[in-house]
Image (spheres, rainbow, N blue to C red):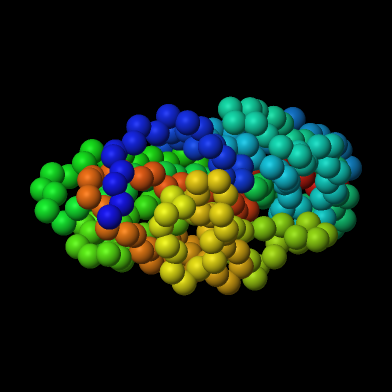
Length: 291
């Protein structure tokens, strides 16, 4: 039998980029948000210029990377990016993107012509979660105290176990970890590819998923690499289910544990990485006709 006692986990260990301290309570269901969009002049004469400014803030619990923005709805209006990409935006950080707009020369028009402009913002983000798994002898009657948590961001991870607690009745007991990946933000999982063109084949699929479990657990159905006192399951591509309707995906990981003769609580860690797209509210710029 395996004799272990409920550990008090205070150490910070690393899974890739995951810090194994207690993540913040999910105070925000967003990552990068658009805090404002404005133009210097909303009514332009032909060939007149103005600036469009987009204000961004990272309100989530992770650093945003490869932040890029595309201005849409231009029609015949010219737009030159002054600044429309960032390598990274720190947690809590703010920034402004800008474009130089030039009104077209509208031949043959006698009335105002509206241009409904909208900005699409793409960025890379990570979300993390942790969960305590209680494992007890078969005759143990109380439920050990357990906790779980998730970082703030547009993709939320939750972890459940098929047995609460996991009761070990024999030499080997099997249970399953259920990992739910849910889009709780206002945008979609999307990726901007080469030439600043959206890669629609990757929509609603996270880029990677990592699960970190104690090294004495046996993982079934997935390859797991050893890292110190841990086993790490790293999934990519088709190994990760696509979010149904862009909203939710579920993954089950079967686990075997040996019999224990004292209650214990083990903590597991999950991290997902993904691309995300949000859109600004439309803003209208009116071009006056030639007189």
